[in-house]
Length: 177
Image 1 (cartoon, one colour):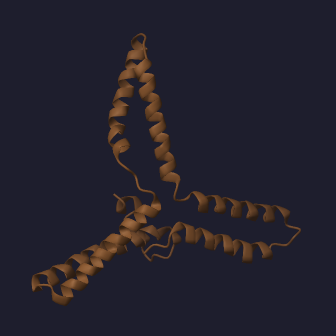
Image 2 (image 1 turned 180 degrees about the vertical axis):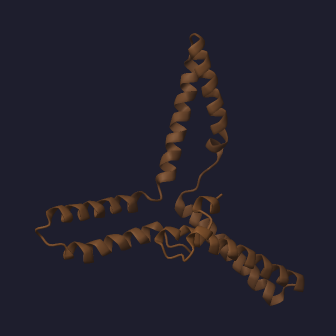
C-alpha cells in the first residue's frame, strides 16, 4: 500500500512547523520566509493533490464545448475551413474521453478497496473449501499480481533514493502503462 499524498504532505508540514521552523534563528528572516512559503505551498498541495486530474478534465470539457460552439458558427475562407477540419479532428479524438465518467480519488480508492476485499475473500474461500485446482490457481495468480505490485511500489518510491540499483527498476511511467 502506498501512503497517500495527503498523509505525506501533512507529515512534511508538521515536520517543518514543529522541527525546522523553530530551529531557524529569528534573525534569519529570509530562511524563515522561505520555510513559511514552503509550508503554504504544501498546504495548497494538500488541498489540491487529488483534484488536479478533475481540474484538467473540467478544462477539457469546457474547451470541447467552446470548440464545438466555434465550429458550429464558423464561416469563412480557406483558413477557416482548415481550422474547422482540425477542430473536428480534435473533437473526434477527445470524444471517447468526454463520455467516460472519471471517478474522483476517493471513489477510485473505494473501488480499489472493494476489489482488494473481494480478492481476499476469494483467496480465503479457495483455502477453506476450494477445489485443488482453484487453490493452486489462487496461489499462482496472487503471486503474479504481488510481483507487479511490489515492482510498481518500488518504482513509485524510487526517487527517495533508497534503492540499491535504481537503474534496474522500470521507470514509474513504464510501470503505469
